[in-house]
Image 1 (cartoon, rainbow, N blue to C red):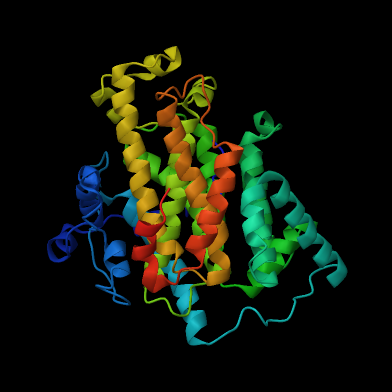
Image 2: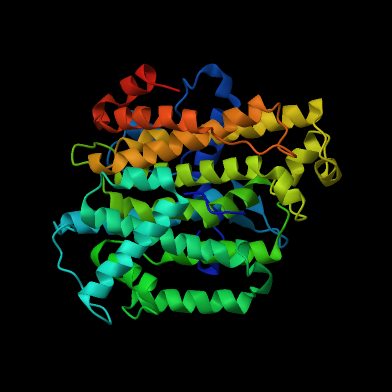
Length: 420
């Protein structure tokens, strides 16, 4: 499953005591479930804690909420994937807020000379830009509007994510073992400690020395690769959500410190991070829906097994590759869920630094259109691959650029004025 341009669920979080659940407010997950059920009501109900922030109801305040609880084999209560992931979001947001308090300017920090010379470091960043231009043309175009330091840093992160994804999806994927991923994680720790292994590592090592980027989302992405080696089915959406966070939501957490938050933004740092997380989840869900047939041919089904059963479907139906009314109805619900995450994500894009918005808007608009193409193909994602045509991409770019020019306070009006 490819990365769409999650913090290992550690035992240290353990299980929450039931008394804590009696005193906290209503679960974010329950609120999200209510929002999902009301998708057909023109998105009038902005019920999650993040959406409350963006509507100006709770800027800068700390939220208390309880996540949906799930039972483990021992009968104890454990937090859901969303709660576990939210703990990571809080940690990443805290790093940025600490930097803001210290009034550090990431744009004027001096270059850190890593093993080699500054000339080699410049060459390393140039190579990262070439890779990004080759494999993510639209996104690369958008990065050219960013400041030089931010642009180079985003290229370095993109290349590391791509290299990580190639470990399990590339030409040598059949030879990758858990030990190989362990070595890749050890190499990651080295580059975060200023000991890069090669030129491309050096670019990322320099980047993390300048920006408040934490290692945990990078480790989490590697954990997602481990999951792909041992797991090909997901019982519930809760399980699938965690996988989506590992392989794609992490990218958002890596990127926000680089892209920066607009000085005039009134949104809380946590809410901006959650929007970035939502975009990663939305992109990965879109990948999954687009690649159903391709994954099935590899013996993989990245769809919630319980929801398939509720729709009267099974793995055998997917392997048969027949578009039926049951499949269409199932797909409609999956697409609605993905669009809900896109809706959540777009609330935060405008909160980013003005020079960083265009590539994110372009990514959001283009990926969201893949869902439209699946519908246009009559939900045949078994033998037809949904893609956005070049003319549609060309139309999307100026729309994304126009959206990127609107300051945070005018985001709601913009969404109504310019929408694909």
